[in-house]
Length: 426
Image (cartoon, rainbow, N blue to C red; front, side, top):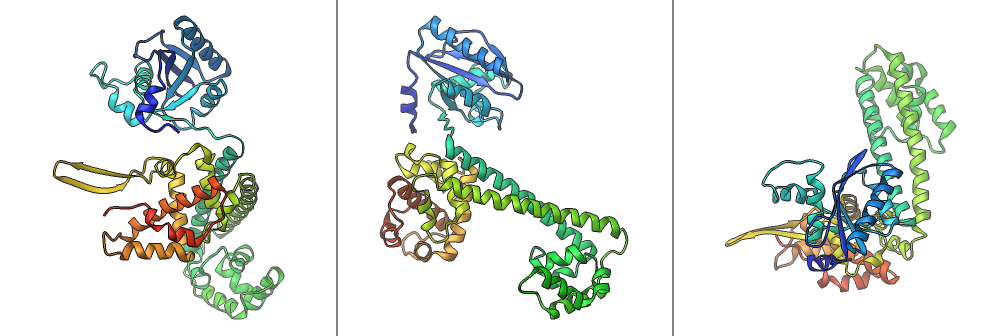
C-alpha cells in the first residue's frame, strides 16, 4: 500500500490521465486532466447503466489516444453505495481507483473561483485536482472470500439491528399489557418465558390456565422446566397485574407476529454464522485467530472481511490507521493538545475490535495483565479507556502476525513483546 503523499504523487506521470467523477444515483459527470492539471476534454455526462459505463470507457480511451496517455487513474468521493457498481466496472477494465475525502472536496472547491458554488461541473475537477496532488487513498475492492465475508458481516449487523428492534417492541408490549412479567422472567427470550408468551400471553389467560397447566406446557418442550414454584409466582403476578385489559385480541395477534418474526430472524442469524465459519476456514491462517481466548467467530470474520488480504499491508500500523486507531494531536506554539485516536477509517472494523477487547479483558488473562500494567505503571499511566485503545492496537499486531506468518498464538510471546505495544499519551 502506498501511504505517503510523495509516493502517490510519483504515480501521476506525464503518461497518466487523471479523471474525476462526480458520482450520483442515476447520472454521473466526469472530467479529464493531465498531470499538470490541464483539462484535456469537455465534460462527460453518462448514465448509471452498462451503456453509460461503455460510453465512459470509450471517452477515456479516445483522450488517451489523442494525448499519448497509457494509464488512467479515476477519482471519486465515497457517495454511499452508489459508486460500488461503477468501481467494479473500472477495476475490471484495469484502471486504478482513487478515493478522495468529501471533507477535502468541500474545503478545496473554492480554490479556483473563490466561490462556495457546488455543481456537477465543478466537483469532478475538484476531485481530479486532489488526485493529481496525491490527496487520495487507493480503493481496495476485496475479491472472492474476502468480499463474501464482508457481505456476511454486514448482513449479520442488519439482522442484529432488526432483532434488537423486535425485542424492544416486545418489551414495550409487555410494559403495556403485563408489566409484572419482568419480575418473573429477566429475559423474555428464555425458553420458559417464550412458551408463556406463545400460549398464555395475557394475565387473564395465565390465571385461567393455572400453575399446574403452565408447568405441563413447559415439560412438553423443555428438558429442564422452570418449575412449579416459578409458575405459581407467575400466576400470582398475573392476578395483581395492572396491565391494560382492552384491545387484547389485536394485541395478542401483534405479539404473536413479533414472536414469529423474531424466530425467523434468529434462524437466519444461525445460518449466517455457519456461513461465516465456512468462509473463514477458506482464508489462510484465519482459524488461528480463534485460538486467542476471548476472540470469537464474529470478531475474526469482521477483521478478515474488513481488512481483506493481509498481504497488501507491510506493517500493522497501516491496519491501525485503516481502523481509525492511529493517534493524532492538535498542538500549536506553546499549546499542546490532547492525543486521541483519529476515528477516520472503517467504522465496523474499529467498533468490532473495541467490542472484542471488552470481551477479551473479561476472559483472557494475558491481555488482562497488560491492561493492569498500563493503568498502574509509574511513568505515564493510562486511564482505562486509553488502555483499551492501546490494547486494540496490540490485538491488531497479534492478528497481523498470525495471518501473515501462520505461526500459532503464544501467550508467553505476546507478553514478552509488551514493550512494542502501542503507546497512548494522556
